[in-house]
Length: 360
Image (cartoon, rainbow, N blue to C red; front, side, top):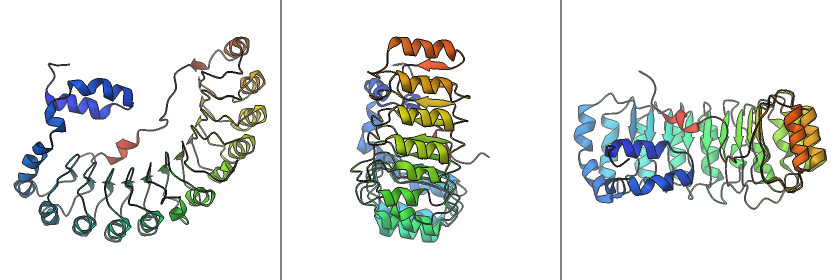
């Protein structure tokens, strides 16, 4: 690894999905990658670069924590056709600068505001200037509330992918009420969703991918059954939703007939009745995650063994009520199903692909 060029090392680092893998590679990364002074050098050349390449389709300010606003104010002069813009970890970005950039780049399709300090005011300007937006990443933007999400939902009716992971307690999901059917991918990991907010999130009817793993401060009991209203859903991540029980799981299994991958790892409240509902109603399920489910017992696994006719992969490990005999019976009866003991946090499609620049 030490012989690889700096840009190659950084490229490998950004492609790694898991935190442990990134931590293992971190010592090999060149100091330049974490040197804030280097970004000052980069940004000093931006005006001349933008003048040299006036027809850019994609532009990234990733990691520019000291990005001069003077550079951003000049951005619309040379990038009116810009489609993809990334302010990944650009914490210095202000609402004013974002409003100027968005007003001058009306053709934006994808915007990354990961770990930004943008507020609802900035999102309102963005939505008003860029109605063609399809992909927005607001993850870890703690100044955003339901009001900003609502502005995007109302103003950008082509919105296809929205990422609001760990946006704080002010994002409950209610801002998505009346969202467009175009909204197909919602990443809301570790959010303080409410029952009303979750109902709003599926109100558009077009969701195909939903990640609500690790919901914080949930007060709706076994109320995740509203997800069953997302009839087009194909990938559902409920990992660490420990309160999700038999009633919710049954409602989801009945209401989401197209479901192909379902992560129920650490859903301790799901019992034999819930697993039976999954087995009986999930006709198209191909991948199921049940790692560390405390109430998955031999009876529940027997139900899964007899149902889920299209199952291809079962992630299962750390279920204390399961006996080795029950697991062996599953392997013998369902020899075509690959049984894996690993645990995955992320499932479904790679959402970062949606933010890549368009192909020439």
